[in-house]
Structure formats: structure tokens, C-alpha cells
Length: 413
Image (cartoon, rainbow, N blue to C red; front, side, top):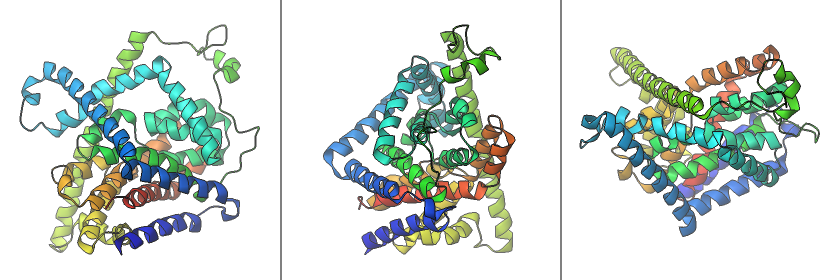
């Protein structure tokens, strides 16, 4: 019975995308159908076959080894905080970012990561039938994160129209960043974290194809390059006399990367501390009205129907609904911190859908980050369209998380 409810949930989540579509008549049903089938097959392969499980378990083991190497540097500076039975969350989860972010930046600097993104993006465009840049961006944000991917794609954002910019803003709600996956795998089952990442990528394309369908001509379906705007960039000194982009000296680049990683750690820590404290304050005020009232209970009531459609028993569905609401109001780290000590005791299906749902940046604070990023890149017309569609951005992020959890949940019981 629960499997049938899970299937129903998947249908309902897709139907919501159609109901709220800005232009139902323009939806590319063949493309959407192809992507849904492709994503279901991928989720099936990664969760149900020994080869697929070996891939995600191997990737999870790789990220865990990366964390162990990062702890060597942390231990050198803070031995009293590493050589303990239970490391603080800040040390265990956040400080390794100081190594992982520069590592991915180095891969970008030497051209390895852009090459990977480029060819996977082209392959994805061929499979899904989506525009080249949207497919390219889906892969880009999986590795780099939302604001970082938008920043490195600023040239393209300036050239494409406002409606396509809105598409990218909606997709940005569902990203993660490869440099932070290691932190996730320290708190939740790594195999489901790493299954969620590619499934989210395809679902982001599915959701925007339904909510904001855009027709892109062959002439528009291109990826901008520095050479294509060399003359414009020369005016601000970003290219040399041959029209090639100037490259920052390596150690200057690495120093900026390390400082950026430090800022990221402080931003995450500040957000988690503030959101947890604010949630506690709201709970305290609600408790003055009625001892039963709490933010989690209220969010649980609102999100319960969606949690039930994951194919969960009543008790688990209500608990899951509370975690869903908490994640959307605060962030994924708050939920992960609450369940990290008990997640392995959960039923397999519950463990899978919860882990997949929380593996994204989809929350209210992300909206502000994305709007702020676009405001610094594109003109007022494009930014105004994005600002007017905050509801669609939130809906996009929630739908992607629901679809991904439902798809993976179909194959884990």
C-alpha cells in the first residue's frame, strides 16, 4: 500500500508543476517525459543494483577520505578539538571546508572542472532535449553551488532574455555544491546524499520545463565565451591585448580561495546559530499561548499531506513533515544536526526520503542570496522579473526536493 501511495505522490508532485505552469500550452511534454523516465532509471540504478550502489558508496568513501585528510590540517592547528571522542559540529563539519573549497577551485583554475562541466552538460542536453546552457548550468551548479555558478556564468546571464534568467533563478534553488557534500556525508547516509545530487539536477530541469517553459531557437541555443565578448571586456581590462582572459597568479588565486572558504564557514555557522536561536524563540512565544504549540508542530501540519505522499506511516509522516518545514524555514544543516545521531535507526525508506529531501539549498534564505546575486549581474528589467517571481522560486525548490525524495523512495524499502 505504501508503495502505491509513493507512486501517487510522484504523480501529484508532477501535476502541481503542470497546474502552476506559466504556459501549459508551451510545455515540451516529450522532453519532460524523457527526463522523468531517465531520472527514474538513474534512481533505480543507483539504489537497486550492485553496480549503482558501488558507485555511490565508492563516492561516499572518497569524500570521507577527503574529510580525514582535512582533519590532519585541523589537528595541526587545533589538536585538542580533534583528538576527542565527539568533535564539535563546527570542527567536524565546517572546518574541512577550508581544504575542500580550495581543492575544487584549483581544479577550476587548471581547467579540469570546467572541462567536466562542459562535456557532461552537452551530454545532458542531448539526453533531455533541453537548451545547452540550461543543461550546462544544471551541472555547473551541482559542482559550484548557486551563487558561484551564477557568478561564473555572468556573461551568459547578460546575453539571454529575462525569462531564461528566471529559469536559472528557479533552478538555483535546488543546487548543492561539491565542496560541501563532504560535510553532508559526515551527518547523513552518504549513499543517499550522493544519489540525491544527480537526481536533483534532472528534476530541476523537469520542474522549470513545466513551471516556466521557454522556447529557445537554434541561434539562441549557444554558450557564451570570453572570446565572444572580448571587445567589451577590453574596456574594463579583463582581457589582454590578444583578446584572451587574463589569468590571476596561482598563489594569489589560492589565497583568495582559502579566504573565501573561511567566509563561507562563518556564513554557515552564523546562519545555523541564528536560525536555531530564532526558532527556539518562536517556540517559546508559541508555548506561552499553548504548551502544545511549536514551530515544528505547525510546520508538520502544513507539510503533512506531502510527507504522507512519500509512502510513510502516520507517525513517521508527521515527524518527516516537521523536518521538511524546518529545513525550508531554516536550512538543511539544522535538520541534519538534529537527526545525525539517530538517522541510522530509521526505517530504510524513511532514511532515504529524508536524506534526499534535505540535500539541497532550497529554503527561504536562499531566495535572498539568489536575488542579490542577480542584482549584481543583470540589468533592472531581468532582476525585476526574478524579484516578482519569488513564489515560483520557492515552489521550484520545494517541488524538486519532493520529486527527488519520491523517486529515490520508490526503490528503497
